[in-house]
Image 1 (cartoon, each protein chain N blue to C red):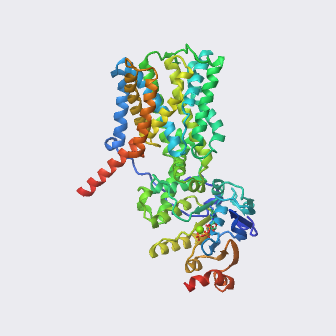
Image 2 (tube, rainbow over the protein chains, first blue to last red):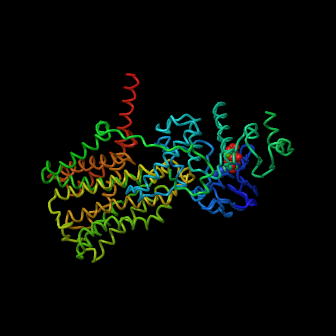
Image 3 (tube, chains in turn brown, red):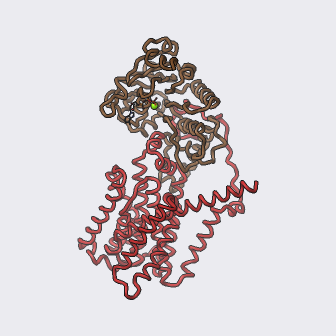
Length: 268
Length: 359
Ligand SMILES: Nc1ncnc2c1ncn2[C@@H]1O[C@H](COP(=O)(O)OP(=O)(O)OP(=O)(O)O)[C@@H](O)[C@H]1O
Ligand SMILES: [Mg+2]
């Protein structure tokens, strides 16, 4: 990847539901290693935007380009907006959805191991016949998943059913699952909502340490202090449109943002 | 540790410090034998192996039927439990396996080759028709598979090469490496071996990477996709795998009975497989075995009743439908997860209560 190519480039993306735009003509670029926050009032289109990056929704208009890693580490930007979600996952895009989406009737460890699907390959035949390569891969996935659980502080829960986890731990489990994919771009849709103060702080520290390691992240969050602390740049959406983009300081002083979003918060 | 990852992806996230992990030594043999699961497998295997010796002649035939059903239901239970799809025409794959074996054997192809071809043919046909069928949502697959079975029954019933309504008679006995499977109990052992193979394959798949993908998509297809699980391809793979299992059972059936006819593969048989899977508990191997055993034994009783003196000829079929209906309603109302998962849940709760009280 040349310095000029951002990791993610979104151009004029729109998506409507029943004739009403959820996202309208949004463009943005995220550089490798950047932490980008996306903020905006309820219904602004933040989740819709993320889902068009991860592939669960397709854009009505516009393009999404992404620069995947290749064997040498250098890739060319690829247009990915028609790719299926699992293909995008294989390119290194991982998402933590808004609200818990755990896999039932599986242990916490198995939930996280599913995250490794994107970068592993042994399939039905190899599993059925228990080929040697399959064993090696399983051992590697297990080790990675345990490490991911440890990073989010869930190691003690590894062998318990994910169904019995408290809400805070369910969030953390999803983050661990995403990390187990070793993503190049991590999308976090309100990972802190519903967490208690201590859990929020642990999450903030985890995001901070991932940022130090150079992971590119996009983060949706309502708590402006949380975002200001963690993000390099902030994109503000309102009614599906991008109304501002800049550093946390620029956003704090932006008139339009104050009017549309921050004003409501501080008034409340 | 050797990760199957490309270089570019490696550098992004460090999951753990670079320390070598030494695998923990496995528990000793004695400790393993004391685990309830291992013990159960052992006891069931021994009993299963002894049964052909202990049972009376006509009961061995029932046993063969039971084992063949268990082979089919193990696959169907995976399809229903993980892919969330109902196949109301699974006897069609049983039919395909049986006709593949019978047709090849009556055309002087070595019988072992015919038996090997039976699951493969069923699996390939399932993969081909699955591509359009699995795009269907909800219960549409159920009706599409049912339609497929009716069409197949029509095809084999109308065509000379398939023996028409009378079917193919005089299928030779199976011969593998000079050994001829002639007695009923030899077919019981053959079916038992096939069931063991099917259970092993199912267990291996469920407990590994593709199995985790399947179990994940059973909860949420969207979340599974985002983790990189190719949902449609995986559903196609289980559909094809379950058809392959049914085809294998069908192949054995053809050699065992020595003839195949459309009448041996009625739609009622497809319903029977579904009822077995649901009653045992979807998505569990034990459930499939228990469901197949319970319904086969029940049917045996009904059959004796239905063919008793003074009963009209349609009695067995009518009673089967009625019993399936009543059983399904009872299970859905009182044991919605099926026999085996409900029993497991009861056992775990009891143990938890004991531990809590004692410790
Ligand atoms: N699947 C859908 N079908 C219909 N309308 C939808 C769908 N998804 C989103 N919308 C609508 O699109 C708009 C944007 O929704 P979106 O979930 O992207 O907002 P958001 O910014 O994530 O909001 P929140 O902060 O509440 O999560 C809303 O008006 C929502 O009702
Ligand atoms: Mg949202």
